[in-house]
Structure formats: C-alpha cells, structure tokens
Length: 161
Image 1: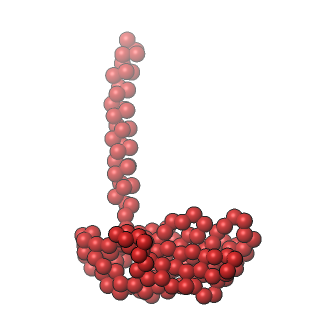
Image 2: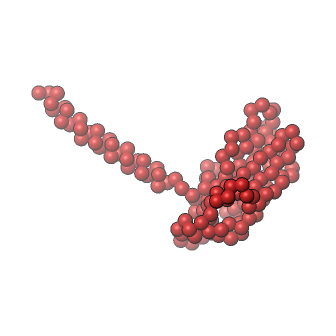
Image 3: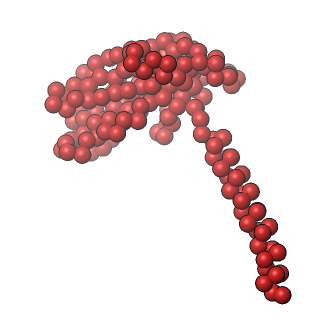
C-alpha cells in the first residue's frame, strides 16, 4: 500500500522537474545572441550587420570598442550594428604555451558593413618576426578580405593582460 502511494506522487514530481528544466533552457537560449550596439528600435536581421571575433586557439581577439565611443564589456562576442562605416578598436594576444612572454597589440580597423551580413574579425601574431595583422571576412565569402591591416608596435608582456 505504501509503495503505491509514493509511486502515484513520483510522476508529478518528475514532470514538474522536467518543465522547470525546459523553462530554464528557454530562458538561457533567449539571453544568447548578438548584443545590440546601435541607437533606435530593434531591427530584423536583414537590416543589421553582425560582427563577431574569431575564436582561434592561441590568438584570441577581442573587440574593445566600436566607432570610438561605444565601449564593450568582456565576454561580449557578437555585436549587432547598423549598416555603414564602422571603426573597431581591437586587441589581440598571442597566448602560445611555449613562449616565455605574451605578445600583444591594439589596433583600429575601419570597414563598411552591409545589411544582412555576418563579419568575422581575425588577428594573428607571428612571434619569430615580431609582427602581426588583423583582417575582417564576411561569412558569405570567408576567403575574401573585407579589410586587412598590419600591426605595428607588438608589445611583449610577462603576464596575460
């Protein structure tokens, strides 16, 4: 008799836990997406451009600010902007485990964003030459450079910035 009583109440408890997990997953998925970095109402994807940093293993690249006035926070990845000319301020760090120092550079990169496009910001540092460069590609044609710029002033750091 006792086992029948507990088995009747076990199913609703598992069902409540299941719905709670589904709700939590939905809330987490809604929070993920490109961060709006333009003034005005939200626009559909066809009317904005998305800029995202590359996630290369040993050379992470971060967007510090956009258009010299909109600061970004650490952890922001995809950024939604209006179409048009934009200037990104980026940092790139060579975080290779066999080097004694981290190599680092900051750089401004200006390009023209088109509506409905997704752009990826890349950077690389060549430690043997003590030079680096950054470039932007479109997801429609990843082999074509939208803009490419060489870095001057590679800085060796003893700790990770």
